[in-house]
Length: 406
Image: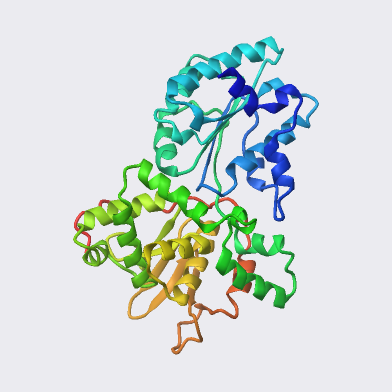
């Protein structure tokens, strides 16, 4: 095991991390700004959450490179572990204790510990909690990453008052503005062309660098299987979503479109897919948020919409894709997104914004203050929206009990 741990930390031997050499060879690459949102002041327990293939591991390796470039930080004080190598949480605890002795022998009095893909390890929080409670980590900085919010956000509850200065950072695919910047688009014609490309390839840097669709989707399917979800049920639910999009739907109407699954099964699966960062939810809002009414589901990246459409064997309307992109960007900006319906419908509502999204020119009048978007001006709206869209804006309020939704 010691040899394996040393191979994961080549800087201990004065060698370069192969992951950084591969990163330099990429055609499209960035140093993500989310790595500078983490607390590096002891004691800190940070969490980095987001979907697979979004660049969490690469970001961590780039942060380690920055730490190694500091004259005040010794290589032995930095530990990186891919937690997928451990059969159980007990092996992680044993390794962390071994590292503490190793660090002391090297003369490092504090550590920067990076625990990658920690949610792949059942009971991962137990060794960290033990070492925090014993005081063994109180001079250290810990950064733990997870591929989904499912276990991370639930298990974080085991650390009340135990995170020090730590922060939780959510990492998502590139926004359109970030995509356009990487592609070097700055004129109107270049930006319009970049937007059409973005609708095809989405904001996954790995996909922009040639990763096949099969590899992108496999990470999500593996997560579904790991958490005991039926791929056939997922396929039927997604196919129904694609058929009905971009209309607002109820759990019952989706269930009626499957081969006999109950609305509670559909609800449970959709909440799971939301935790996987595959879909988002926009609730109805007029004089308040109507959690019990039909809601709109949106895919959180164009690439995800396309690969899962192919996997489910169901096409979707072009107008749905436009609306999904706007919903996602507004959600990242404001932390929540809604829609309005009372005699007429407004597709996207958030923080004073009222937006109607069309594939073509609208055929009716809308009230004053409603922003009308179509394929000719969506790209400009997304750029004007601005804000730090690399890191998600947060969570919409938790829905109340939804038993008996219509």
